[in-house]
Amino acid sequence: MNEAVLDIAVMAGDGIGPEVMEAALDVLEAAERRIGGFRLVFTLLEAGAEAYRRTGVAMSEEVFARAAAADAILFGAMGLPEVRLPDGREIAPQLDLRERLGLFAGVRPVRLLPGVPSPLADPRARDVDLVILREQTEGLFAERGRGPTSPDRAEDKLVVTRAASERLFDVAFALARERKARGGKGRVDLVDKANVLGSMAFFRSIFLERAQRYPDVEVGCRYVDATALDLVRRPWEFDVLVTENLIGDILSDLAAALVGGMGFAPTADLGTDKGLFQPAHGSAPDIAGRGVANPTATILSAAMMLDWLGRRRGLEACTVAARRIETAVERAYASGRIRPVELGGTSGTRAIAQVVVDALDELG
Ligand code: ATP
Image 1 (tube, protein in one colour):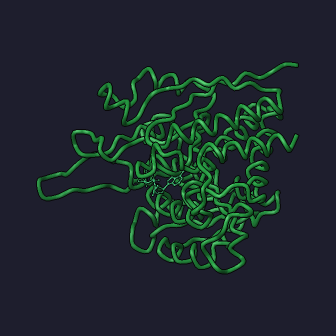
Image 2: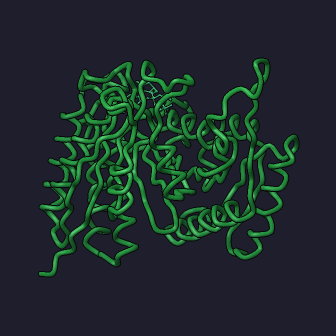
């Protein structure tokens, strides 16, 4: 059989990054063995705060070039609070990768897995199934790192451009369409602060203009403060939420709490032809090195990577493997065999990976 060989750049990074990455690679290898039809070749690349501490460079040009050339990038977490640049900022090669590879769309699905308790008492909270789509190349992160403009003043500029907004909204509408075809609501809500900020009023006008091209998708515009309230009060009503960089950053952590915590929140950072897949969480130095990090977000990010590769390359086997990993994760949780430390249980990182691998085996 003709087997597709896929070049995957693996950037495990700092803190719990290497721990959750090892778990995800175990699951990917198990899926590859079980399903066949594709082969993943992993190249481990060093970057992040530890790399900076050791070499004085957070991500070398050589590492960047290798990652950029890969078919996809699988990313753990980078940055440590005690390792800082001379101006006091944390090491964050993930932001450089987003900018330099044009990974403008942060796709963050939020779904409660069967068997995972919801923090909300309302039984409808079990039906939470939404996606936060975060703009990742401009917004309030556009000029990060400029530092104070005088000894008494610091500023950050919020940048919204027509081109970046249009391509983001196109992804949002396409996503809603695709979800509708699978039984979803087919709705996109823009989240902004257009009542106060001119940049966001502009963002909103582009959204409404672009929406005209997608008459089959329902649209809404919402303010971020009210959305924070409703994400806790009635999150099951949302479908696709599209928003600016910093708002997306904050709301995705809020949304992760609705489905069990940071260990359950996967991400795909997508550009026009590049994809980086990572858990939404950071390096979690408070729990690093103890083997207790929940690798579920990284495993689900790996499944998103296979799904993306499958679509882009027309590789049915990758698409099948993606679905199979998602189903294995669902079954593993539904069976009660996983109780992550994050939720007060005792299942550590390796144990969770093993249960998912076993569930994959059971699926045949
Ligand atoms: P960043 O700014 O880089 O996103 P952060 O400082 O917001 O990172 P995280 O590293 O995401 O913080 O951690 C936030 C909290 O969630 C911490 O208490 C951490 O222990 C917890 N956490 C994060 N990831 C996991 C995980 N995979 N399993 C269990 N707990 C996690």
